[in-house]
Length: 430
Image (cartoon, rainbow, N blue to C red; front, side):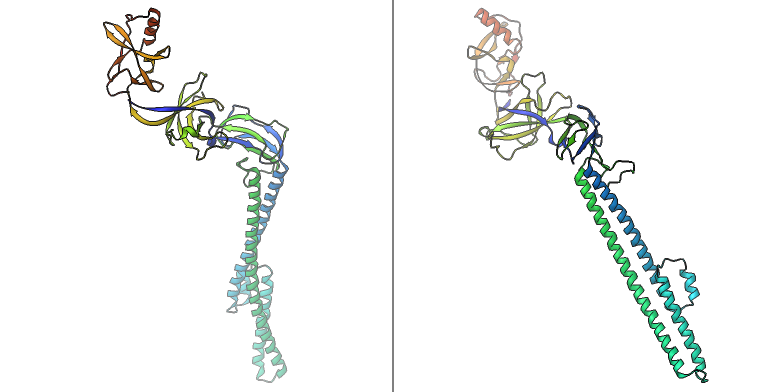
C-alpha cells in the first residue's frame, strides 16, 4: 500500500479566531447590569450588559442637538427656496404690467416674505406715475399745465420705473443668494450631524446595534449603553460585576462559537523542511491521557515566519467540535505527513509483536500450527506497520490472536497449536 512517514508535534486547542470575541469596555463607565451567565448561549444582538457612561450621554446629546439644528436648517432652506421660486414667478408676471388686482389675486396666498411689500409697493408707484404722466399728456396741448409740472411728472415716472426695475433686480439677486446660503447651511448641518454620529460610533463601537444614530426614545437614559453580543455563541467567561467601574479596553466578556476550534501546532525549523503540508490538507489530532476520541483536522494556514523564541513555524488547523468533546487549552499531539508516498509491504499493527528487543510476527506453518518469524519494521501508522525485511508480498500473518500466540510462546518456549485465524496480506497492498 502507499505509505509515508510522519512526524508528531505538540499542539494546543484554541478558539477559532473568526468565531471568538474578547469583549472589552468601549468607554469609561459603571456596569449597571449584567444580563448573562457563563456558558449561556446567545445570539448576535442579544444584550450582555448595560453600562452607564457620561461620555456616551454627552455624545448622544450632541447628536440630538445636531439633529435639531439640521431640522431648523432644512426648514430655512425650504422657506428660502419657496420664496425665491415665488418671487421669480411674480417678476415674470409683472413684465407685461398687468393690473395690480390681478397680481394680488394670483399671488395673494403665495409665500413671498418681505418681498411682497417691497416689489408690489414699488410696482404700485410705477403704475401710478404712469397714470399721472398719461393724464398730463392729454392736458399738455391745451396749455393747462405749465412746462415745469410736465417735466416734473415725466421725471417722477422715470424715477418710479428705475426704482421698480432696481427693486426687481435686487429681489431676484437676494432671494437667489438666500436660497443658496440656506442650502449651504443645511449641508453644513448635515456634515456636523454626521461627524457627531461618527464620534458616537467611535465611542460605542458595535456595542449597541441600534445606537448608530443616537435616536433613542425620550424615556431612555442618554448615558445608558447596552452592550450586545456581536456573534452567535456561548458566553465563555465574564470578568465584571454589577456596580463595577470599567475603563476603556477593560476585559468584560468572552463570547465564542465552539462548534469549530483551531489546533495550533508548532513545527520546529529542523523538522520543517521534511514536513509536507498545505492549506486544506488533513492531519490527525490526538489528546494524550484523555477519554476523547482522536480526530481529523483541516489545515487552515501555515505561518510565514519562524517564531524567534521557539524557533518553530506555527500551523493552524480547523477542528470540528459539534460534539463539544474538545476544549480550548487542551494539549494535543498532531501527526504531520513527512517525506513522499512509497509502495510498501505492511501488516496490521496488531500483528506485530515485540519482545527482548526483537520484532516478529506469526505465520501459518500448516496443520493449524504457526511459526514465529523475525521482521524489520519501518513506517508506522495507526493501523499499519511497514515490514522492510522478513516477509514477502503475499505472505500470510496472524492478526487476531497474535498476542495470545506470543503469550503461549513465552510460556512454552516452543511452537504450539492454536485455533486462531490467519490474516492474508493481499498482493499490491501495504
